[in-house]
View 1 (cartoon, rainbow, N blue to C red):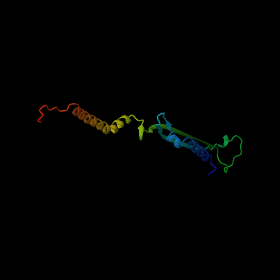
View 2: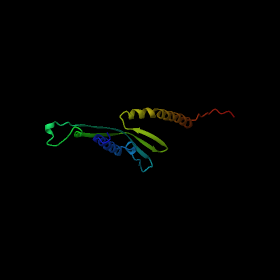
View 3: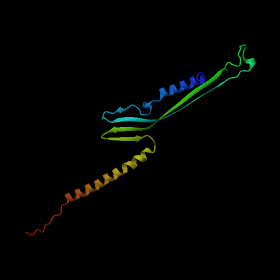
View 4: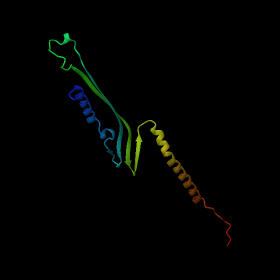
Length: 148
């Protein structure tokens, strides 16, 4: 069965897919910005392939004068195909002492707001505390009734 033409179709298709898909397709090449931040693209790769074929049994009158006995194989017809889809999913940003994953989807903005909410609340609290301490230092209590 290893001499069957469908084996060659499958082998060619799989080798072509192997050449197209590698780790650099999923995790792209890193890009360094002038400030030293490194950006790495992350993608989703989906692929599929199909192969098929069949042997054609020609009627005796269509053999066009060729002598073909029953032990000889019938003519083979087949084909194969593949498809690949690459979609960007996120960017990994490494820089300024932190690592962040920035998704590309529409819901990413909402997720980002939810992630930043605790930091925003902390900043507002610090602002109010700073405001209270500034008022105390600017308005000292003056006592004119001094007993000596």
